[in-house]
Image (spheres, rainbow, N blue to C red):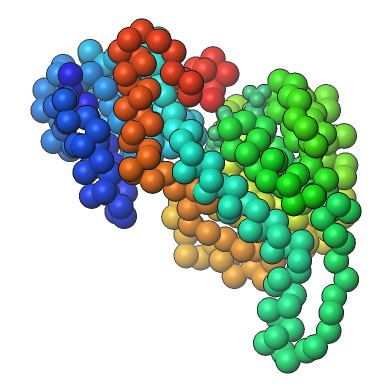
Length: 310
Ligand code: NDP
C-alpha cells in the first residue's frame, strides 16, 4: 500500500511528515513532490490547499483530508466519482474551534475591546452589558463543530440557536432548519457564528440581506470559509452600524493581501485561518483509523457526502 502526502504549508510540516511515517509505518509513504510512479499511489493524504489534480493517480482508492472543510478537494474535477473522501473531525479540531469561538463570543459579550480602549485612555468607567441568559448566540451549521460549540455556550447559560440543513434536536438549543427558517433564526441572533461548510448553497451567504435580518449592532464570528462572506457587504454593514464588529478567521484570498481594508478596520479582529488547527499526533491517528475502515470495506464516520458537498 502506498500513501502520498501533500503538505504545502510552511509551518508544522515536519511534525506532520513524522506522524504520517509513524502511523503508516506498514505502508510506503511518499511525500510530494517525490511522487514516483503515479500508478503506485493508493491513498492521497491532503494537508493544505495545494495538491496535484487527483485524477493523476489512476489506482487511487481514497483521499484522506487533514482539514474538516473539503471544498478544495471537491473542486477537483479530475477526481473520479466513487472515490471516498474522509475528512478530519478529531477531538483536537472540535476542542480548538470551541475554544476559539467561545473566546471571541465572550470577548465581545464582556466588551473587552472597550475596556482595553478605556485602559489606554486611563478611563475608569464600568459599561453596561447583558448577562449571558439575556444574550442570544446563533450558530450557522450544527455539525461536528457547531454542536460542540453549542453545548459549551449552553453550559455558559447563553440563549443558543442553531441552523442546519436537516432538523436537529439538542437540549437547550433552539434549532432551525433550511432556508425557510433562516429569517426566524437570524431575527434575534445578537452574536452570529458561521461554522458552515462551503458549498454552492452556502457561498456568499453572509451578505447584506443576511446582515439586515440580524438585530441592529449584531456581532459576527466567522470561521467557516472565506467565500461565505461578501466582503464589501460586511464593510457596509459595519459602516452603517448594522453590525458592531466582526472576528474573521477565513478570507477569500489567503494570506489576506497586505493592502486589504480588513487589516486596519477598528471593528474587525482577524486571525490567520488558525481558529482550529488539527494536531498531527491525534489527526493522523484519526485518519489511520478511517483508512483501516475503508480497507475493511466499512464506512468511516466522517466520510464526505460528495452529493451534498460536505
Ligand atoms: P459538518 O459537516 O459536521 O457540519 C456542517 C453543518 O452545516 C451541518 O449541520 C450541516 O447541516 C450544515 N449545513 C451544510 N449546508 C447547509 C445549508 N445549505 N443550509 C443549512 N445548513 C447547512 O462540518 P464541521 O462542523 O466539521 O465543519 C464545519 C466547517 O467549519 C468546515 O466545513 C469548514 O468550512 C470550517 N472549519 C474551519 C476551520 C478553521 O480553522 N477556520 C477548521 C475546521 C473547520 P446538516 O447537519 O443538516 O447536514
